[in-house]
Structures are given as structure tokens and as C-alpha cells.
Length: 442
Ligand code: SF4
Image 1 (cartoon, protein in one colour):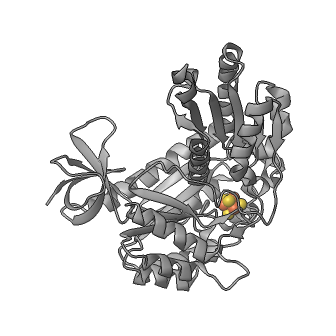
Image 2: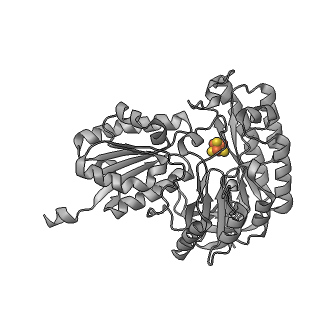
């Protein structure tokens, strides 16, 4: 009997999507711990299952529906199981999710993350379905929620929520609402807290970090400067940067900041003006090119990465060829490449001249071939170089080989000789490859 009272409830969180979703999930996990749940890897023994969803691509949504179906059997076996959907799909679909799958107990929108504890406790008491999706434009979700961080070495710190840009292919502004920035004081307090707990690297997160503080006196450049000076911090990263908002002041802050890493993820999305215009990206190939020039002049060691979409509506062979030329000219360290996927509710979904699937796939292959070759050539130039890495731990497939990251965000594999996760070590790059560098400690 005694054992029954002390037995802790178990929760399983399934997380899809971007870093922002993973960061939100850390704040959900923290809240669940506070009301007596501990994490489990095994869904079949969970008392609570939460899916933090992503709806950026249709495939991500399909996977979530597959999981929702799987969980129905668990719920049939254990009617006391609490099952909730959170994240972007929850925000977008709301009540429709429960109509489609009545075994869902609650649906919680992206701006209501901090209300998880209350909702779970209410369901524990009454077991009636809840749907809470409202987008309160002024609300900053999850700020004061406790955080159960995924990593002890590096921490994500959200600095803003939402997006004002309305790129025509993107669902984010529709599900995460307009931009809202946290106060600098609040962010610095969180950064100081994680550094005091032993994290040496923080990543400042937002859909468009460069417009941090919009409408107030607080700017992203100033935030970078302040975070750089937090006592004990070793590395500062940030993502994502919209090219139209990356100011010279931010470039100077990166150049001057001792701990600000020389890596900028600068999604270009496409390499032709006609497509950029239809995407509503609000910059041109020329202005982007000039920006890259300014960045490289100020920070010669910088690594640049990007996102690219192939098969956007109306894409012609000429557009695509211009994109390949642009890649060869800019020479990114690496790129995340995506096939355009229609998102209902976005303008691009109803644009004319949607590109055939077979053409999209064929272009994606060609695009990746070009980018992979560039990545390999750039990495080749690092052969023999000595670089500082933050040691992360054993690699996935081989306990004897450990991984770490350079300031420029390149992964290095090296033979383990007693280093600890969290150590900063110097490695000599011996075998550069397309996606990783191999090296050894010096
Ligand atoms: S900047 Fe564009 S792509 Fe990025 S989140 Fe906002 S609307 Fe989406």
C-alpha cells in the first residue's frame, strides 16, 4: 500500500520539429516533474503521453496522425492514461483533433505551454476533454515555467516568440502568432542561471532573432553583447536569422564578442529574385550577396549555413539553374535542403504552376550534389588545422569515438582518451569529410 502512494507517475513526451519546439518541450517536462511525473522512454508504462507537434511539413503531420492512432490501443488498455497534443498542430487544428481522435484528452496551443500543469491537474480530477488554443498576442508563453533541459552542456534560451514575416510558404506566423520579445533582463537572468548550473554554451532562439526587441530600445546586437559578458559563459550561438534584418551592428557584435561563435545560419531559401519575390522574403539576390560580403569582411573565419527549398510553385529550370549558380558563388559550409510542401492556409498552397513531384525530387538530388561537393571542398581546407571543440560524448555507433563541435558548428569525431563531456579541447583535423571532420586531440 505504502508503495502505491510513493510510486511516481510516468510521462512520455514525443517531440517533433524545430529547436523552438524542443525548447518548449523542456518547459513542459519541467512542469510535469513539478507535479510528480518522471520521464519514461516506454510509452506502454506511461500515465501521461504528450505529443509536441510540428506542422511545417505535411510529412511531419502525417507522422503525428500515425502516432495518435498507435496511442489509441494504449488508451483502450488503460483508460486512465492522459493523452495530450501540444505544439503547432494543436494550435492549427484545435478541436478538430479531438473530433478526429476522441481518445485525445487535451489540446494545448503554442501560447499556452505554461498552462500545462493546470490542465493536467484538472484532467486528473475530472477526466473531461480540454481544448485551449487561443493566441494571446501579448502573452509570452512558458516564461516562468520550470525547465527540464535536454542537455547539461548546452542550453536553449528563447528570446522571442512568433513571426511577422509571412513568407508565403510558411505556416509559423499562423500558428505562433506575431513577434513578442522577452525582456533583456529576463533573458540575462536565465542565461546566468544556466551558466551557474554548469552550461557553458547557450543558443538564443527565435524565429527571427534579428528583429528581437522590435519596437523597443532593446536590440539583438545589444543582447548579444550583454550575453557575451555573462560571467563563466564560453560560447554563445543564436538562430534563426532573417537576412533582411541582420544589421551591421549585429555583425559587429559577433566580430567583437569573445564568446560569440563564428557561425551564422542565414536561410536564403532560394537563389533567384523571381522566386524570392513570390516567397515574400523581402530581399533580393543582390542584397543577400552584399550582406554575405559584409559578414565575411568583418568575420573572415565565419561559417555560413542556410536553408533551401526546391520546387516552389512556378519554379522553372532557369530559376533552378540560377539557384545552383548562386550556391556555387556563395559557397555555404552546409545547407538544409527541403522539397516545397503545400501548407493549407498559406498563399503558396494555392499558387498556380505547382511543380511535379518527380521534378522536385530530381532537382533536390542535383541541388544536394552541388552543395555536398562545396561542403567537402570547404572542409578539405581545414585539414591540419587545430581547432577548439566542446566535447559532447560518445558518437552514436562507436563508444570509442567521441564527438564535439567547433565554434563554427562543425562536428568533429575523435578517438576517446578519457576526455569528459563538457571539456574544451584542441583537436587537429586529420580527415575532413562532407558532413563531419575527423581529428585527434593535440
Ligand atoms: S521568417 Fe518566414 S520562414 Fe521564418 S518563421 Fe517567419 S514566415 Fe516562416
